Image: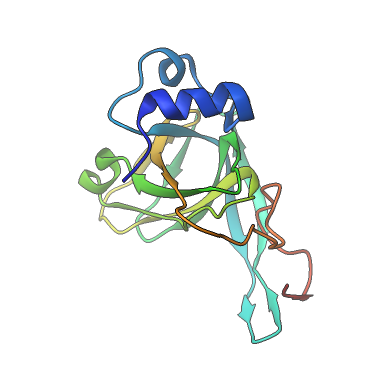
Length: 177
């Protein structure tokens, strides 16, 4: 069962659960979660690799940034990475699940994401793909996803991965933790 907004807002105040929230999310959020916005858009170049012990992601190139560009136009079949304006500081007893805004689904846009483990801190990275036949304009700062916070009942291991802090891609082949 997700935490209610009253509990989420208590954690925002006491533990900085989510930083850089919009005024809307602080004063008039919808439902039981917190929505996050687009700060940066990245194109990916090159090949990726995921092995048992090592990995390498394609290189990422920053192509749009909130406050600099007004929007980014996603062409049919194009795939990009997005970084959130908001930063999370997930306590050891909370797990975060994410859902896309339904406007994306209705526009032929897939938003890809992973859960956010206890102990993770930093911006969130999303994948976005246009599976429609038309262009899609994404305004920088637009809300794209909703975060739901769940209390972990029992022991959880904290996040120890190398994506902490919100980096978007690897610089070279690296050993996985």
